[in-house]
Image (tube, rainbow, N blue to C red; front, side, top):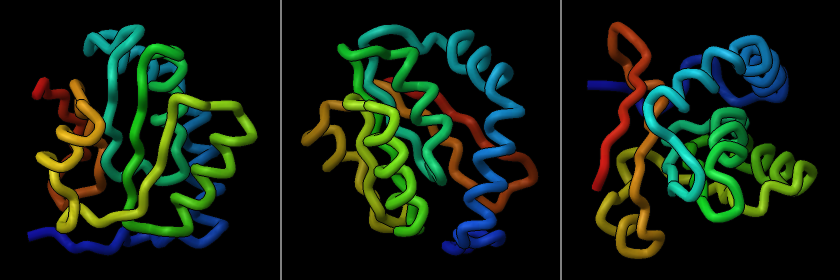
Length: 135
């Protein structure tokens, strides 16, 4: 059983920490995404998107013909992600506040025709999970 609250919270200081961490790890994350097969035109779902950094990187990779949907339970994180998307002109990235318990793959697949799922959600397991699956 995992907890529905991110342990480190979603205060501005934590969002800044996540952004800094993402900047440091960006080369590794980009390599992971491209080696996993993410390419131009794909549609991506980022579960537990936080401040949106992995979503933005994926949006660059999939380009204008692709789409990225970021989902996080913290409305503060989603508000920040939306602001950053607007400032960065990420027209192919959208962000929604919802919990994993309320999230429905069937609804998302039907409404957004999502082809690829990138899950980097902070689920209480021994290691962080990064799952790619075709639906």
